[in-house]
Length: 566
Image (cartoon, rainbow, N blue to C red; front, side, top):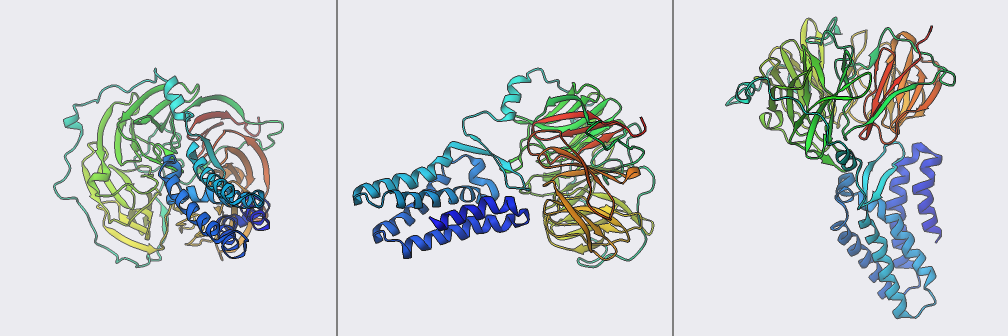
């Protein structure tokens, strides 16, 4: 009994008291504790050998049999390990409790209750499903298996969801023919060669192809850096809290927003259809929706697209989780052209789906099809070039200029790969294996900041301080020497926006809380918190003037923030 108590303390209590020990608690509490229980039972218990060995065999058979009948979210979650992670602590507790409670019973009854206890501890997991878990505390979103999901409830209530009009041209004209042989360019620097130490700057001014009327044209803002200029807000949320303008349900997906005038654009899942949806900024009312017969799902992230729409020249460009690239009329959603980038690039859907947000640069639309950059003609959709294939990636392409050469940078499974904007020729690579999710960033001094996992740290240091997040903790790193100036605030796999004129971070935590944090190197200072949205939230927030847009896989909300000086 002492061992199982220690197991449960290590698994469930230690991570709460010492959050940095979450991984140790998970591994030690589940597998270490489970092994200790097995060793005690086999070698030190007083049960007959038939019961000792029989219980072990029955637990193994019970777990494997249960995996064949549990909901697919438990069977496939955590790379197939989720059922064991959830069930082992309870199974160990059930075995020990049975051994203590039945020690005075006659053998036949003991063995019958042993079988029933083990099968119940295993089989009970067939009654539930999971909507995934959060990274900060491994909180599992468990529900009874027979209850409707949020998406199912939404579909039952949204029969009048608007549709987009037919294509603006016949489909045969809008779909440019795929080349007989892909245009793949592999020239330039050799793999592993470090980039030249040349002045590095973002492409100057407004991004190539940026929508003139769009205040937030796509993923992480005009320059894909999550920075907002020209806005300062009141930080005393006790007296001037965010005010809800509207709130409405939305289909699952991890897309953020693009904003033009009174229209906002996002991506979501509605049953068998992957949807590009347009809503009114002022009211949240739906305007139009384009549907593709496509659905991606995986256990932790759930269903739905991962990328964010990009606005350019009156069109909205999107990249879905199964690899569909769309160019739609931004006013009414009519299809201009559409491509199956996954098939054309010969790339398999990665574990967590295609997650790149389209980059519009000049006359090109560029998407990261996993670890391969693919460029299409912005007007016609004709393929222009394909970069080298470098495994998986969940990051988005970034435009930059080195020594006058415009290029596109993508983080991938092998590190960083940069290709020429003009033809996709390989220019340089920086090796660093991982599974990149975050966007590479650029500093004013001309350095690339990159990270390839949630625990890899940062490379390409620069002479500045920058906030970052590691292992679910917000940190400030001195890029001159890599030392950490401070860490604080556990926001899980949350996202943030920098209010550059105010040295202020607007953080949206993984659990849907808003927080204001000083973006200064002296110390961590959280100024305010506010509950914004319920449920796991991985979507990037958007700030347009004094209107803050947040969403997750279930709902989206618009808040009005009080501006400083008013």
